[in-house]
Length: 451
Image 1 (spheres, rainbow, N blue to C red):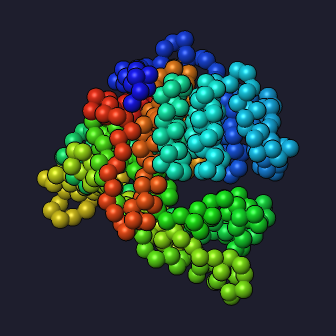
Image 2: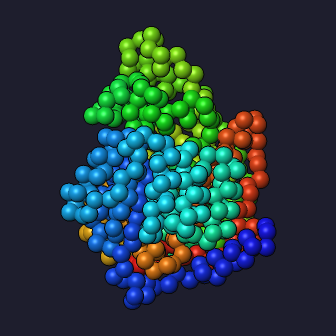
Image 3: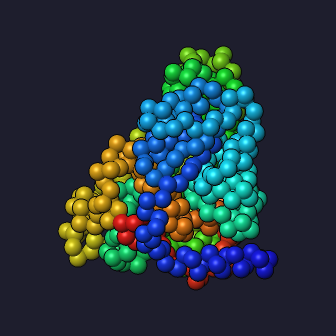
């Protein structure tokens, strides 16, 4: 690490040893935010921004006129001043003009994955704080480049991983910190979600989900860009929903780190079967596509403190939604799939107990304080919390609770898993993005009801 990077990283270490309470001067401060990407996901986040009195949405950018128009309407219906719009002319570089707008405090990036790294780097270089949707980058080099930009500029960066704020996940975090599970040994998580109806549609903006078998230029919304990743890539393509909470439980980058990774992929059958069934034969062009992404991708991580973590990516087969969390230690375990918990000496021997009783007892202070406000927000309230954390951290000029080291470490699982699979399921050493700072950094995420 270069001397300047070391100094900046050391400053970041000092700043994140304690998450301060918001100073009085910041409580009534408004932050001026822009948004790049106003599609389906962007609009969910925009909903949370426009209902806050401490946020001014001053700029919106999208090259899809329908989505940009819907976003502008959302701001108007909220009774807020009209933002400056960028991208109506279809210019793929319109986002660069947005970053030149004077007075921007921060920007939300909710674009297709391949744009996240270049947009975040440009924003940080422009001294505009970044709230980036997952993932942080595509290639391993992307992650190093994003990290270097943050260290060079000192501009705040937060990965908007909402599952870290899920109600049961945060209750489990309280249980981990209380020692209920004893010493942690093994954890599991993943992204187990039938996305076949997301990856294909009929291209009609009014039918974004499950309406046909088009993708790419003929598709709409995520079918336009996300499906192509299933065609050309084979790996753990969406790790942060599963790894984020597990990383918080085990103190990754803050007293612990990933040391090794390997990944396995099953055969790819689900997307082909879906297109054949949906189109009623094998004549449609989508039925001729050879999908590279294995239907089930299983990734294992080893940690410096001895824990193992298993992730599963499962989006191409019929199944109910589940992130498959499991937190297991020397005194017991929690599994979200069966809403069950077993604590030795407290639970009946060899029997599960209902997790809700424990969740009520260990409810996180953030949910105690904000559950009513978050009601009705996207993904069961999680989207309110992740936006709240970004805005409040900006106002207080405080460290981001899901910071640059978290972002690149969690997201780099994708290119590393691809490399492992391509090399015959090889076990790889996991890079230390903190350059040793993980041994000194202290946990800051969600220790109270602040943010």
